[in-house]
Length: 140
Image (cartoon, rainbow, N blue to C red):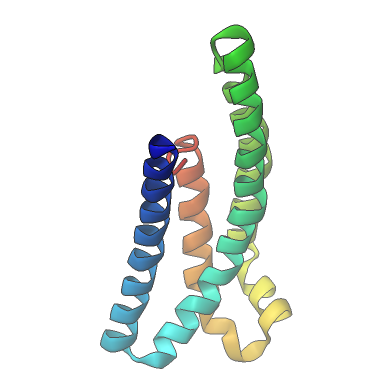
């Protein structure tokens, strides 16, 4: 029972530090650049983070159970991991790069003319997420 509590404490701690680091960056941006810049940044970051959470995050949750089963059954999970990366990168990278290329019309269509200044930061965030995804479940 102690091991489960320690693991839970570590996972909650890591998740809390992740959220805290994101919020600290937003608070710093708001205090340095003002609330208008913070609003543009958060609008620009919302679509990429939702795409990441829904595509990569859900896929990672599914693949972890499969890799766990493979590890119990065969003692290794390398093949499952590589297949997952090929599948998710084949879907995720084109989605992110395409979103970056189409950032101007996407922002106009989704958010309206008043948020057009969020298109460039959104494109940069999408490109950085596509690049980070190639590292292969580094966050997990």
